[in-house]
Image (cartoon, rainbow, N blue to C red; front, side, top):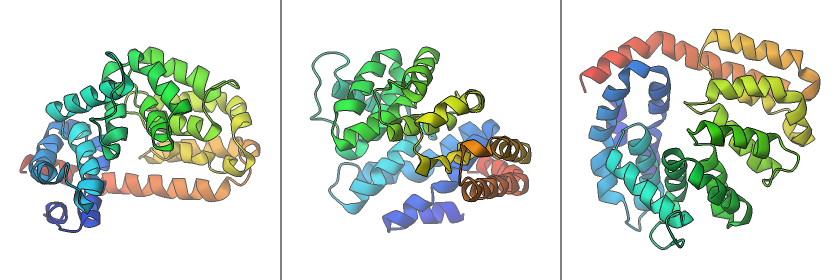
Length: 276
């Protein structure tokens, strides 16, 4: 099939591009998660094993993409545990921090999986890193915080990081956390409800030049009902999002394309996966 052919392409950017449809499949074909995992492992595992750790374009740029795919979509428990061990070691969760074993191109994945699997014990170390780390560490740590699947950590992030005027993170980092939570498989719907309820308070933290981007909060939706909900909400709160029109149109179009793909191809894709 076309995806498998692109996955084998020697150019890393073509091979990386072959993974884009898999995000849609994982989120919109919930009954096919095991079939998707089998397909991902069959299609990408051998190439990942061949290139990981090599000082090549593939090793530096493609390997992290494939590692993330194998962990989250391929359900690769061995690789997941490896990333959690490396992330925990990097953060010093079981003793003195040791950053020597984790390559920079795997930092984001390792920290995300550590947050996801370890939960609350990783919260403060990641928050400290987001404040005091290197430029690379700050971005990776902020993204990792949003990967939580812990209810207590989730509530702390919204109250103390995203909404609080005394948040230790910058406005951009707080936005990264909020956007990550909006895309969360665990807390996405809950965060959308929070966003709607807390927009007047949250928008005070958003610089004027970024307020027009706020309709992007609905960018993970994939149904026409959700499209209409987003449009109504944004138009009803237009005064809080000056310059919203362009981003709203872009987001609505993205939702419509996703919904159309789901309507036209979901059953076909699910059937095809069973044969792979």
